[in-house]
Image 1 (spheres, each protein chain N blue to C red):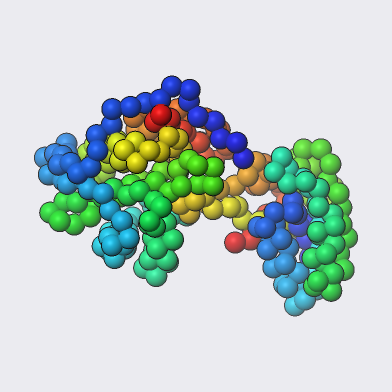
Image 2 (image 1 turned 60 degrees about the vertical axis):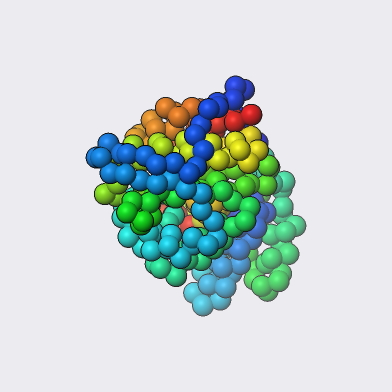
Length: 118
Length: 174
């Protein structure tokens, strides 16, 4: 399987990427890390690289420019990926699960299967 | 994330403790609650209808409910509980965020819904919040939950954010 993993440098995204990297040790899936930035997070290619090195994993890193939600959907489809993986949202102070605008857009628009990691 | 708040404060909310009669004629007491009430609240949330969960809370199992309540019902949070015949049937909480505002959520057991208890619980919690000096309150609500959106608007919350799945609403107390 070819997996397209969204990464915006947030704590949740780092945890999701680590989970994927642990899994592919067993499955041998091919991973591309799609690095994007949001209003809250600057571009973080270096952080993605560091996580890959820490897991001794080799994966392609693709910089996503422009509107991240639209670009993630587009790149996953044109790239022929089987699955998009995103962090599963944050929790509010009182514990409600909340999606950011990128996650909402991908969930509503992707024809590719989407996995949210909790 | 910058959250918007209305310019004009809303005031004159009642403070706990209060006794109210709901639209079914049931008498309820609304009182401030805290860490000492967690065990009792766990028993209320165990009875909660899974279909009434909102954005993942309350959690489904008793141990997860206890863990969640111990994390949110802290000394920093404000809580008001509605009891009927001594038993908790509704709970509203105000949990501080990192920007000096507080997030509000309310839960009412299914047999007690639709009787005006939620509105009075929220208004009473806002009275408590005002007394404790809180100024800005926000909440999120699933956008298909129009009864809840209507309830919050009636109390004075304004829609301040619009996601695909949820609305954000906020209210200024001072």
